[in-house]
Image (cartoon, rainbow, N blue to C red; front, top):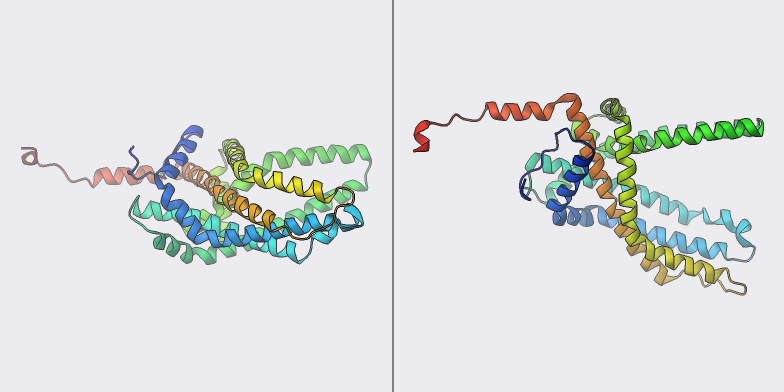
Length: 321
């Protein structure tokens, strides 16, 4: 396959092939894809990065005030924190929506046959589904979180040995269930956009295609997450080093709280912006894995290729001479 040939999404792929086709897709579409992310999702990611930088800077300042860590810890969960969380949610929804809108547009039109306007159009047509899907999944996660908190509270009333045992089982359960759940909560937006289905239908669809490939999904998500996380260190490391330097200087005896650090906000914003855009590659890998699982179950791509062969016009012998 050359760099301009259209990549077939609906194809069953193993572990290595999923990563290979993801890298091939990014290489083939690198310029237009990241330009689309920068222009469509970029403004929201930038706002989120600025909000995060202000929150981190103000948190460091609060924790270094007179009274120490314990007295000022909860002071950091105020308006700045709420703005940061809200901006992060919107930015991530736009990032995942733009990524999957690009993949869907690519499937429909092929490489080099669409523009950023086409991607924006695909995203706008599905923005309602994205928001409703998020709200539905958020409600479910809140209920699950409340259930876990209830279990922890119940454990606190029991003996120490039993609480440790239940806590260990709960930890193992989360370790086993979390990677596939993260994958489902990502590709659910792709399913809703691609198959024009509701939030719960989309979630059931992801569970349906994953049913016989649970551990493959677990391995792919863990490996992809580790790879993208290590790559993002290139962008997050300068911010982490700078933040540690500021914290040490603030907590020194006799240090004076100087308030918001403009250089730190600039560095943090740039690092967060770049690392956030990089996580779009994780959604691409998740998307290709979904198409692979769906093809194994439905065989739509195979039927399409058979139909294409059947519809190919017969060559006339005279055309060869």
